[in-house]
Image 1: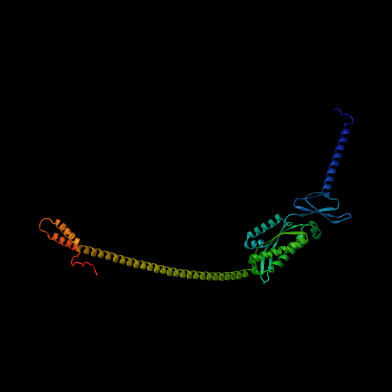
Image 2 (image 1 turned 90 degrees about the horizontal axis):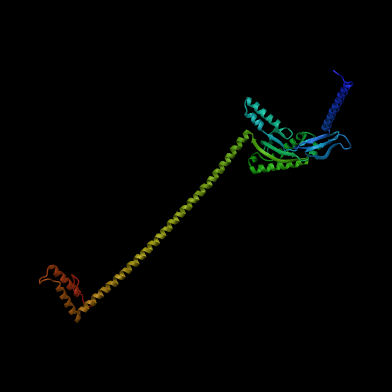
Length: 380
């Protein structure tokens, strides 16, 4: 195999050059990452950034708030992060109540659940403590399940007063929260917790108190929630009995009022029925009176009419009799008598014909059957 003179030396020189270049590039990358890690800081979207300088003319906390982004920080400068999220301080008896109800292996599972929940929620923005034992004004104890929602309004002030991390929770938030709740809700008596308007007013007062104290230290109170409360078992029973007695008294009083109203209604109905009966009686009396007056008037009118008719008939008979007694009346009588004989067939009258003839004669001369002839002047 033919060897070119100097080729080996050239290859060795090339390898050395490539190794040196690779080494330089690697060192440059390392230096870049070191510089990037030590001289830059990234503030995440859910964070605030607060700068601390350890060297230079001005050391300590920088009066500037850094919002999400990538920033250059010089040597001896540290960017501390504070969460922008809503913080939850939960004073609850959920864990203790669940552990009390659980039995055997279930207690271990309950404990594991709450530990896992705390790890997921994290200590930075969520803290769970035991429920507050409030001593009321009348000497009874009420266990309250209270939740405080708050956020960091001035991270620079928080950093100056409490430092980094979650030191502000242990050194300020917990104590202020506990003291504020005990001071405000402790003014109530035990029974007032059942009174909705009074309880809501006390919660609003506690929220206003905490908002003022938190604002002074760079925090903002979003909401204070009273999720539940419970009394000691003996007081719960006595209070329940008392409430039942009060409600029973109210029930009896309202039933008494209802009975009184029913009695009044019956009285009104009785009076109304009596008035209706009286009115109907008066109406019937008036109707009977009107009917009697109508019958009396009808009888009087009918009697008067009968009297006028009888007088007219008598006057007609008188005039007829008087006319028959005159000279011309005799001819009329004779004529009528002759006509009566015309109705008789043959020379002999039957008894029926004779009776009819006599009656016609009486009628002609104005004599009623079984009576006597009326005088010419009529009845006296």
